[in-house]
Image 1 (cartoon, rainbow, N blue to C red):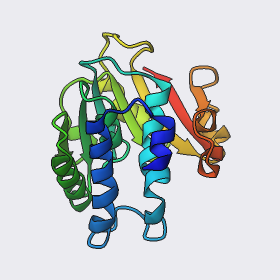
Image 2 (cartoon, helix red, strand yellow):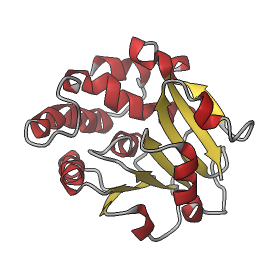
Image 3 (cartoon, rainbow, N blue to C red):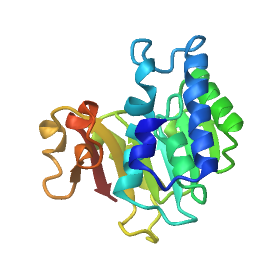
Image 4 (tube, rainbow, N blue to C red):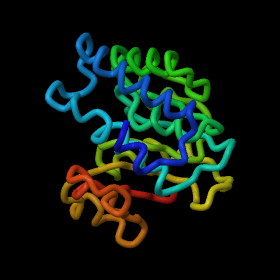
Length: 206
């Protein structure tokens, strides 16, 4: 776990153990259920776990924050973030049951007690959240329509509640609708690996 250690030297032994469990289990699961591209599984630490943890560089969620991970797939970005913020609750939602099964097993074996799971459509989710996070699930305007009703009006964190997305590539057209409402941060500001040169954090206050 050399790359993660470089950027997160403050992790406790317990957190490092949980992340190492993920590094061990995802390749094992991927042999049975394809949650990560077969050609990309060797890049698990950087392209998936560290990528998810970029949000922990952008904002330090305070204890008691409630977060929904929409379209989590096999658990990204929710599970790595749950390791980073053990006093924050994460609700991971996905429509693909077999991928969610992988995330559930890995969370269980890593001893993550701050994570819950829901199989099904986002419209079936109940409750309020301070933030919704996602990793390249759908265009921002579509996601905003789905998640608006879930965002709590009570703000406790350093930034107002809203939507935090991990995206890559040219986002000019996708973000043109928002003008100055959306904040874009280059992940390359935090991580120097080649993979992150075109990767961005998109923050939409709601």
